[in-house]
Amino acid sequence: AQSVAQPEDQVNVAEGNPLTVKCTYSVSGNPYLFWYVQYPNRGLQFLLKYITGDNLVKGSYGFEAEFNKSQTSFHLKKPSALVSDSALYFCAVRHPSGGYNKLIFGAGTRLAVHP
Amino acid sequence: NAGVTQTPKFQVLKTGQSMTLQCAQDMNHNSMYWYRQDPGMGLRLIYYSASEGTTDKGEVPNGYNVSRLNKREFSLRLESAAPSQTSVYFCASRNRDTEAFFGQGTRLTVV
Image (cartoon, rainbow over all chains, first blue to last red; front, side):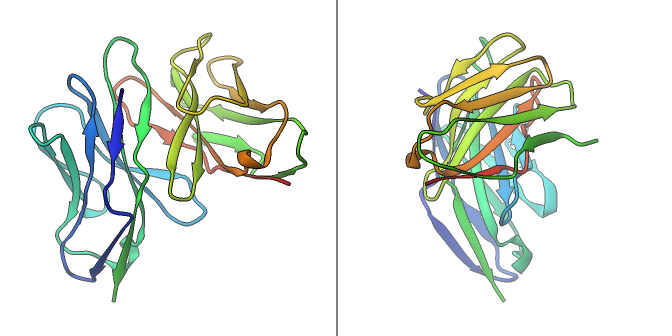
């Protein structure tokens, strides 16, 4: 069965410092991987995705993520955090083939960026 | 371009009442999803529809039914609401190889 783990409930980082939000997954074959962000009382917004190709993918708002197949990880990163990055971040996985259309999310990680 | 539209935005139900959450997308997407979001649980998949005319159970389908009325619309019905169904409900849609687009959510309280 597909599953996604976000091992940290909350990540705290000082503004200007690099940030990492961790995600590991369990799915057979070659998954599609996604990161979404949720601001208070809003729906989820897409940040970036990995489907194939370069293991380092770049997305919106200066975020990037690195796909590591051997570690089954897809960690979200940003070189320099902003206070406005404070939000709830979700990792998601989908198996691309055979009509297997489930899009499964992790429990979410709250990012708090302090001035 | 409205994207994914959910109605209503807020709802309070009494235990045992029924209601239908509506979702419509105008992006000609094939797949549509219903999720619930609870604190500490992330988003859990209730039902999904890979294409018009098909629906499948997700992780937490008990107590819910869905209808894929046409390509645009995917509704979620609570036949007999329970306090455990108090949650924020999100509808989403996507096409092959694209990311999912989410509605703004429906905040449901069952008292």
